[in-house]
Length: 380
Image 1 (cartoon, one colour):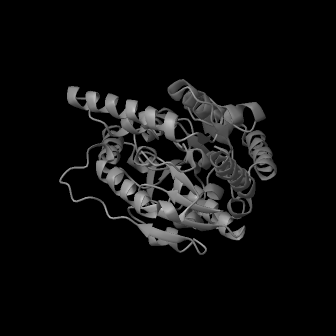
Image 2 (tube, rainbow, N blue to C red):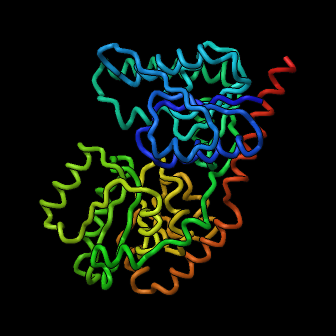
């Protein structure tokens, strides 16, 4: 079996990119030839790949890139040029799935988030934009229904959302978590570097965007600053400039500068240290991405507070390994006032992650779906 992994653009090293690295390396370990087709690749991602070929397809030179049209055309050409060299096409993230039209190859779509969520973040809601959005979504559903028979999502929340949008039942495969890695961070290093030794530290990890909802974390600090001494909020993640400016303007307006640290984008070693240095992870995100961070923080034995909209909130609630709420200030106060109780919850969560979420399990289940897709095609 030969697998072509298709991903629009590696411009940050986040959760979706980590999924691809782990999957590609697992396929290599199993002796399965694989390659990644993309329009841009980060050196820090490429250096972690083991014998995976990287195919860079340059974007079109058309003078506009409305709703990812340049990536769509580039990925379509890249798939067309390489289709005969691979047996299974593994698609990740919009617009890769619509770029697959009209090819007749076994395809598996790892649907981290459907286009509706992407458009909610990027689309300006003019009448023209709404019309184009509606047209693309109709075409997307046509392509998925007629050309991509196998779909994977990470949890029940996304499965229900996918069924509602597409009328098709996807496979559920939970992402893996590097328990051994994230349980070994250096908390003293970060606390000394940022003078946090006597602080109560709230951490949010993830790209600064409206869907990650960092403004809600700032509002939580605003409510708590007179109730918790030496309170600090750390944001760790690549900034979307327009949203970052909005958050900073709110901080300045409310005179909260001394309570907030912008850590910026960082490598996994520094993020690991942050997990171990914080007192609690706050995750007030809307239903987009952000699946890995709470489970990574649990590896460090830290209590986590997540929004009900967070796609893995049902797992966290069911297993009793975190607080699921939209009253973030109340949850943080409860943790502050009984830290030992909630540290025990975090440790319980770490044990659950170690026993239930591994990359080998995730990757093998993906491979099983690849084989199923290939077998189904051969039987036609």
